[in-house]
Length: 140
Image (cartoon, rainbow, N blue to C red; front, side, top):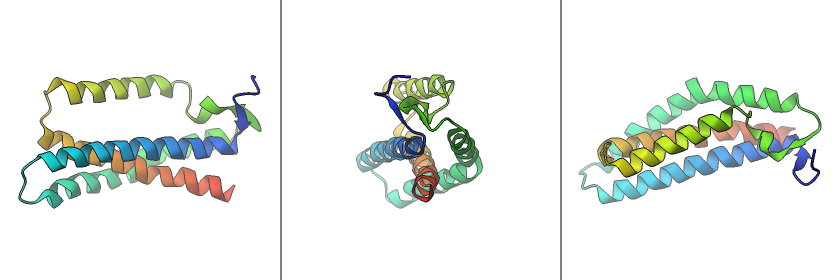
């Protein structure tokens, strides 16, 4: 393995946490900008309609993925590629999800009233789930 990209496996936990929280915060930021362009009497309801499902997605969906990733990382060799923070097959899923996100934003098929809480939900779920990676990193 190229020593330039080999890191102690512990740092894959940090990388995962940074990636999940970074993408989550980016999605929340997009949703917040869209929210500011909507003329709503109660924007609070739009935010809550994204955050509550986001927490549920994190607890009942993403938590299983995080657990599998943490266990996979903990079973790796002491030094591994920095790109191993996700399973290799997960990169295909990431590309598909990113492509779908670009399509949803640019196609105009999904109105802001639906897109905004959806982005709040996924952003919240990713950000909330990233905390497990950080907790595991700092306790290792």
